[in-house]
Amino acid sequence: MASLIMPTVDTEIMSIFLAHTASVFQGDYCLMFLDGAGWHTAHELRVPENIRLMPLPPYSPELNPVEGIWDHLRENYFGNRPLSSLDEVEDRLCQGFEHLFRHPEIVSSITNYPWLNTISLTSN
Image (cartoon, rainbow, N blue to C red; front, side):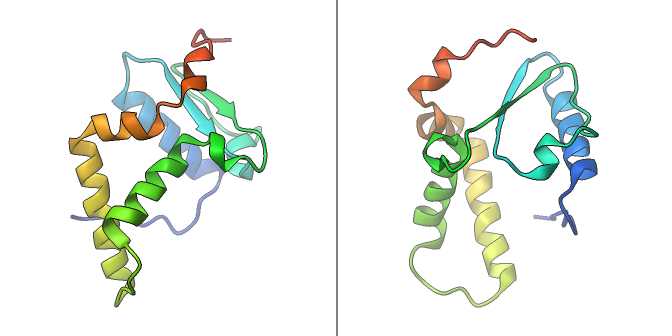
């Protein structure tokens, strides 16, 4: 699998990611949960109309749905064993993401926290 390596993550890269996500989900309204990274909150960040950004409280990984994805990947694709190279790390990560892409029900079971159903999805 070919991969795109981003040399840095900043406001411009985040804006590109949001634009790409908005184009992939054109007919949908997307709610995206973010931690407090500077590029998630910069005034220069360009947020498309069909995306709403929701900040998580600081120091609250238990509220971040993606934490369950990372746990799943660690348990199922990395285990407690050393890897021989960064390429091997990337290969295992890609295998895990490909599997999750083919099985969205796994992603839903890991990330569908009950509190998510209490959030209003109407745009502000």
